[in-house]
Length: 137
Ligand code: 5GP
Ligand code: ZN
Image (tube, rainbow, N blue to C red; front, side, top):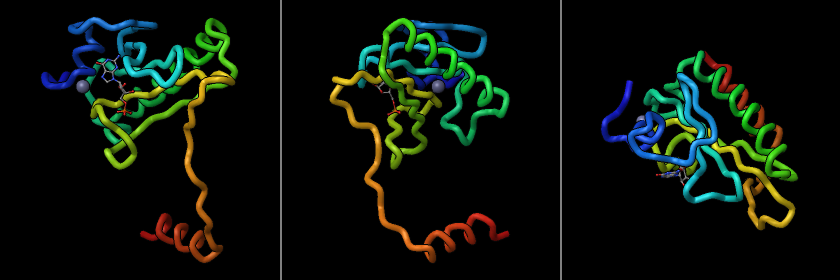
């Protein structure tokens, strides 16, 4: 299903042109217009899903297998020294376009980018509390 108001639906289905790296029946992979690095690509399903929570199991499997395929392609063709997969869900997590996508970000020793988090301290009790919350019925 396509959302008429969604820019990634339009791009994924070719209504808006994009720099396309790969396309099949389910996905289009495009170059990001605000790249973190050379070759920063986005995997977009052609159907509209807001985020990972909504994506079907079938497409989830296919999307991550495709991410591996494109990662190997970019590594080979662009000679990146590393690569991050990033997938944001929700505004709090940095999602700005609410159509599921996976970022594939080639990394270079001199790219000056920082993708990560500040590790927090945690006690055994806090870890135990987290587990209890996850397992409680
Ligand atoms: P998010 O923050 O939602 O995880 O990532 C959205 C990404 O989409 C950003 O990296 C942004 O640069 C990219 N983006 C937003 N609009 C367009 C567009 O029209 N074309 C392309 N190729 N990328 C876009
Ligand atoms: Zn969409």
